[in-house]
Length: 359
Image (tube, rainbow, N blue to C red; front, side):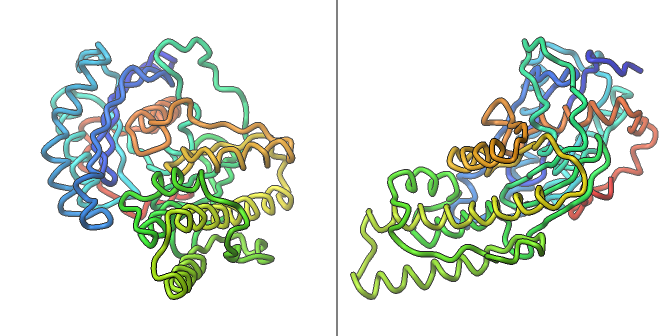
C-alpha cells in the first residue's frame, strides 16, 4: 500500500443535498464535482430528506464518472475509496455508502470511512492540482472552527485524528440561523448567501439586536434562537409602524442580524483562546458559512490581535459540502492505515450523529 503524496483516492460525499465525488492525490485535488440540489429544495424552505435521497441516486453515477474522467485516473489505479459515513441525513448518507461498497467490491479497493466535520476541519490542507507546496507542517495542537448549516463547533485538534469539541451550539447552527433570518426578511432559500449580499448595503447602528449570551462566553456554547426571536419582534414592530419593510430596512436588518450572529461567534472563540491551557498558534476554518467575506474579515482581525495564523480553504467550493475535502481527510487516515479492506465492507454503516471526538 502506498502511504506517500502520490496516494490516489476516489472520495464520495452525499451527506446532505450535494452529490459530490472527487479524486485526490495526497492533498492535491485532481477533480472535484459537486451537483447541488439547492434549487429543488427551495420550495420547502429547507432540505427535504426523501427528495435528497432520490436526487443522489439519480446523479451519483454521473458525478463519479465525471470525477474519474476529469482526474485522468482509471479506477484500477486508485489506491482507495473514501466515503462520508456521518454526520448527515441518514437516507442521503446511505446512497454514497452503498456506491462506495459497490465500487470497492468491484475493483478490490480498501474503503476509508470519513467524518464529514473532520472533512470541513481539514479542508484548508487541500491544494490545487498543480500546487508544489505539499508538505503539511507541524501545526498541532491547533484550533478548528467549523461553521455550516448543520454545525457550529470549536474543536481542539491535538493532532490529526485526535479531536476534542470545546464549544457547540445548543440550538440552531450558525448557517441555519442565517437561513432563518433570511427567510424572515423574505429573501428566499438558501438564505445565508443572499443575506450576506443584502447586508453589504446595510448600516451597522441602524437597529439594535442583542448579542447572544453576552457575558456568558465562559459556558463555551453557541445559541442563536434568542437572536432569531429578537429579529421576529423587530420586524413585527417595524411593520406595525410602517406597514411594510422598505428595501433599506431589509438591508439594515440583514446587516445587524448577521453582525450580531458573528459577534457572538468571535466572542466565544476569543474566550476559548484566552483561557486555553494549551499553546495555540494556528486556527483552521471550514464549513459553508466560512465563505462569508464579512465573517472571514472578522476572523482575520481577531487572528491578528491574538497572534494566530489563520487557515482557510484556497477555493470557495471547498467551504461547502464537497468530496475533495473528504479525499484529503481520507489521505491522512490512509497514512495511519485507518481503512477497511474490501472484504470488510459489511462493517461500514451510516452514522448520522457521528461526532468528531469519537473518531
